[in-house]
Amino acid sequence: MDIKLVATDMDGTFLDAQGKFDMERLKRLLIKYKERGIYFAVASGRGLLSLENLFAEVRNEIIFIAENGSVVEFHGQDLYEATMDKEFYLSVFETLQQSPFVDTSKLLLTGKRGCYVLETVDPDYLAISAHYNANIQKVASLEDITDDIFKFTTNFDPAIIAQGEAWVNKHVPGVKAMTTGYESIDIVLDHVDKGVAIVELAKKLNLTMDQVMAFGDNLNDLHMLEVVGHPIAPENARPEILALAKEVIGSHADQSVINYMEKLV
Image (tube, rainbow, N blue to C red; front, top):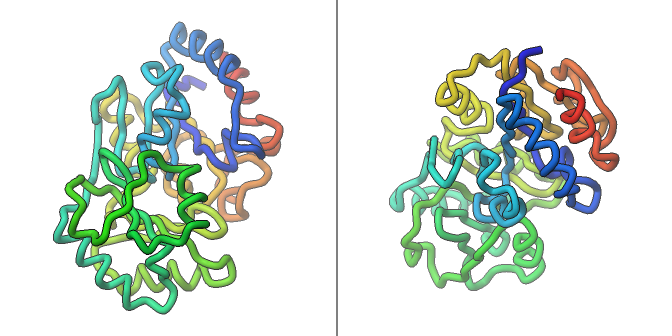
């Protein structure tokens, strides 16, 4: 295999059961990757600011595919981005309020400079969101936001998440809802996902998709794994992901992704 780009999802894939990884081990691997001309990208539904904080020690050595493919950043430069203008995200919010599934107290918008929730935000939801997003600000109204917005994130009861996702995709024009976990969905522009982002990244790096390997476990990784030449899934992945993976490795809890990545060099 002539792999020149390795991309991995975070939660349920690269990160262990505690949401952590071995930074020193990654540092050693990145030195070897650089010697071999291999790029490493983290591809996540998490916000860009959150990812930059998580990988602060190697920030200049890796590529960030954040916000479920809404932005790609390398060396502090945006290689690709897709943002919602104010009129559009206010219109989306107005429609979401009509949904029988969406609770606006469990709704977060992520932007370039921060994340935004209404002042009526559910405290428990805010605490959970702070684990995945940085610089969360409360606003009285979404009208008060002066940032470029990448996406909406909202939580549902696991029993209705499929119905909630389907409702958004049916009733809200111009967006795409995708499951990121068992309680959460992201709502992005309808032409955005990790697969689109990684194709654009490969073009920027002058790589063919056969030179790209990706790891993922959930439905928001589906298109990414469809477009790369070497799709790989941990054994804890959803059945839809396991079905299209060329190789299934151990559980994310056992650091299976970095184990596999080390074998490439």
